[in-house]
Every structure is written in C-alpha cells, then in structure tokens.
Length: 130
Image 1 (cartoon, rainbow, N blue to C red):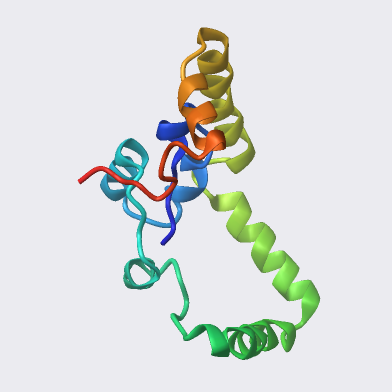
Image 2: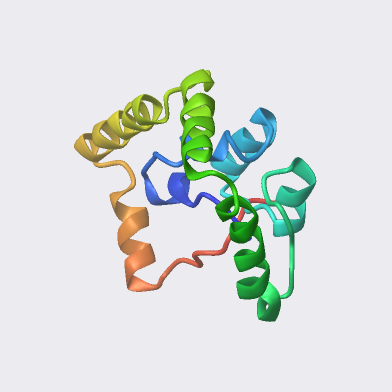
C-alpha cells in the first residue's frame, strides 16, 4: 500500500504530494490514521494509470514511457510547464510549509519517542488505526 506514517513518526511533509493523489477527506484520514491506500484505490481515483502484476511492471512502464517519448519533446516540455503553471498549489511552497511544522515538532520533542521506537523495531511500521 501507499501511506504516510508521518503522524506516527512525529513528522510532516508528504501531504503536499498526497493531496494530488487522493480526495481531500481521504488524504486527511490517511494522514491522521497512517492508514495506507491500495494501488487499486489509487487507480480508482485516477492517480495510478494502471495496476499490473509485478512481473509485467517494467514492460508496461516502458510502453507508457514510449507513448510520451514518441511526442515532440519541446511540446511535451511546454505541456508540463503549462500544467505546472496552472496548478493551484505551488508544490515547493506547500512542502516548505509542511516542513515548518516538522521543525516545530522537533523543537518541542514531539515524535522523538515514536521515531526511536520505530528505529529500534519496537513498533510495526505497517500498523494503521482501525
């Protein structure tokens, strides 16, 4: 699954990217609970192009990349710049915003025990709230 164990680890920073993959309320639950999403769920949201068996992953990835690579590179670069330019949230700015909270949490000492427990192997990294 795809998830954010950040709250369990006393850090923040990936919600900027998560909000691009799942609806806002699902992102909130994933962040608060540390519950992961499956590839199938992300596919249903349109965040994952295809879900394929692991043995087919390389071939399918090459096929997908080939579709884009067959286009005029200048046009693809312009299309990417256009999409990035009209994005309502600047990724760098929002990521820095999130990192500010991680910095504050580190100054307060919050999360230290959770991170240490994880590093010692005392906490299941895949545990999620029910």
